[in-house]
Structure formats: structure tokens, C-alpha cells
Image (cartoon, rainbow, N blue to C red; front, side, top):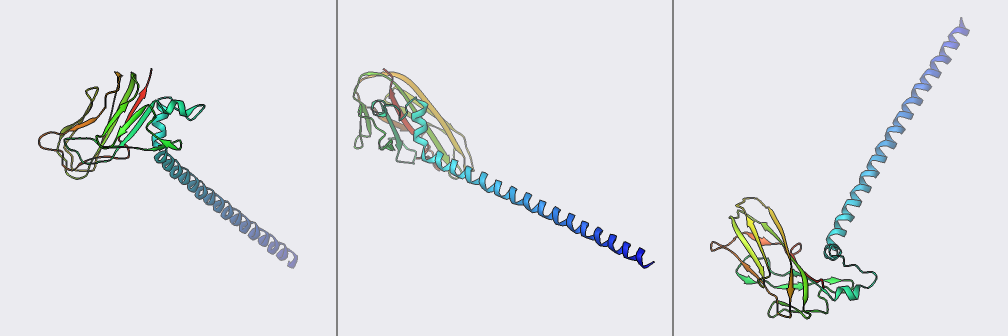
Length: 217
């Protein structure tokens, strides 16, 4: 009788140990799974942040790459035929738009075959030829904006009409216009025109708006 009782106690103890072992294994497995998910989430989040920062820092580079301009094998030769400018005034008004160059490949984004004059706000090609020219207009509504048409014209060569609808929320409107034209050494200026009722509370995005021109041949 005592022997049977001892056998039952041993079996019960072994069963209890096995249950505890299974619980420990399950707990460890769940902990490892949670840790893996957390590490993966942090890694993905970090990659997204880095990608976003890289996109912001290399925004001008994408415009060059889109036109086939790279830093290899001879960026100096290609860069001299290209000019890339960003606006410096966010207000929308009847005016000649001011621009600035940006740093690219350790140099300026205005190639040696162009001359930008801040005083007259004009860009002058120094060579006669066929040019690809584009303008990117990004406009944001800050608060209760009225409808209207924003017009940007580059020396009668390129006209970009941006239709803005009435909006009460913060909204961004984007439009890119381009053309291929024969140009000589005349100065190019970008004129902005707004309707009579103005475009209050609309603002030009200085980071994403741009003007680019490239000598094709």
C-alpha cells in the first residue's frame, strides 16, 4: 500500500514538473516572440525615418537624376549645362519671383553656362540652344482659403496655371509644368500673377517648389 502511494506521489510530482516546464517554455517562447516583434518594429521605424531624412536632404539630387545628370563620370561637364533654383518668398502676389541656388556635388546648382542676378531676379543662359525647362509649384492653404488661379510665367516661354479651390483646412496643391524651347542669351524672369481678390492664406512652399533648366543641344 505504501509502495503504491509512493508511486502515485512520484507520478504526480513528475506531472507537476512537466506542466511547469511547459509553462516556462510557453512563457519563454512568448517573450522571444514579443522581443522579436519589438526589435523588428524599431528597425522598420528607424529605416523609415532615415529614408524620409534622406529624401528631404537629397530632394535636389532627384531633379538632377530625373534629367540624367549624375556625379559620374564627369559631373563638371554636365553641371555646367544645368541650373536649379528654389524660391525665397512664400507670399502669393503680383511680382517677379526671387530665387536662390542650392548646394550640389560640393558646388552651386547654377552651372557655369548660366548667370543668375539676384538684383533683377533673372536667369541668363550664356549659350544659344535648345533647353528643357520646368517649374514645380507647391502651394499650401493655411486657413480658410478662397478659390482662384495662380499664374506663373517664365519669359513668355513657360506658363503654369495652378487652380486653387476654396478650402477651410490645410491643403497642399501641386503642379509641375515644362517645355522645350530654343533660347538665346536673353534674361529669363518668372512672373507671378494672382487674381484681383488676391489669394490670402495661400502660401508657396519654399522647399518643394523649384525652377530648373537644362541645355539639351
